[in-house]
Structures are given as C-alpha cells and as structure tokens.
Image (cartoon, rainbow, N blue to C red; front, side, top):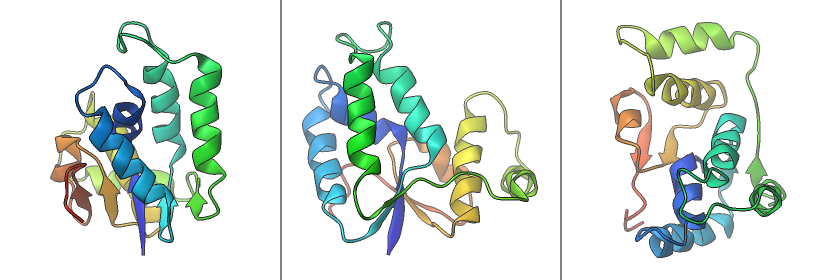
Amino acid sequence: MSFAVDANLLLYASDLGSARQPLAARRLERLAEGPDIVYLFWPVLMAYLRVATHPSVFTSPLDPEAALQNVRALTRLPHSRCPGEKPGFLETFEAVASGQSIRGNLVPDAHIVALMRQHGVSEIWSDDRGLRRFDGIRVRALDDPT
C-alpha cells in the first residue's frame, strides 16, 4: 500500500503554536514507521519549507536549517519516495483539471493530484478540503481513526 502526504500535515506537526500539532505529530510518526510507501512530492516539500520558515505564518517560524533537517529525515526513510513529474505531466494535469475552474489555490492541489495519478497513488493524508473535489483519490483527514 502507498499514500501521499500533504504539506498541511507536515506544517501542523512542526507548528508548536497549533492546537493540531500533537495530533499531526502523532500521525506523522505513525506514517513514518512504515511499512507502507510514503510519497513526498517535491511541491509538498517545497511548500513546507516556504511556510514553516515564514514569520508571517508561524508564530515561531522554523530556522531554515531545522526545516531542511525535517525534510532530510523524511526523505531518508527507507520507504519514502520523492518523485517528480514524468513525461506527459501536462496532459495528466489537464485531465485532472478537466471540467473544473482550476485557479489560485487549487493549482497546487491539482498539481499534487496529477503527480499522484502519474505515480499510481490514490490516497493522501491531508486536511485540505480542496483536494476532495478531485475524482479518483481518497483524502484521509489527520484525525482519521485508521
């Protein structure tokens, strides 16, 4: 089995000022234990680095090196994968966006869903409601009991 992780799970786990931090940290620890394959797509990891170090978002933003260390730790898990776009990505993105008005904040969501489709991943851990609009994926909330 495999799944993807969205940036909000990583961000909540790192934000000590968030009420969701303990829940997100526990969920991330369980997912990091394996054995299921964890897909950490590069747009997700870059969003994490951007937001976690931004002083307008976190009350106590992470030092860039601390944020990078978190990314290193995740990408070094033996069961993690960090793939990028394959040939034909634009066509996959267009198929994901077909029939929808994909703009603004939905563009990164459609990007992640297109990557999921290219890599055969159908499940993502996220509290992002925007992802629920896309067919063919299952969005698992942080407080999902399984």
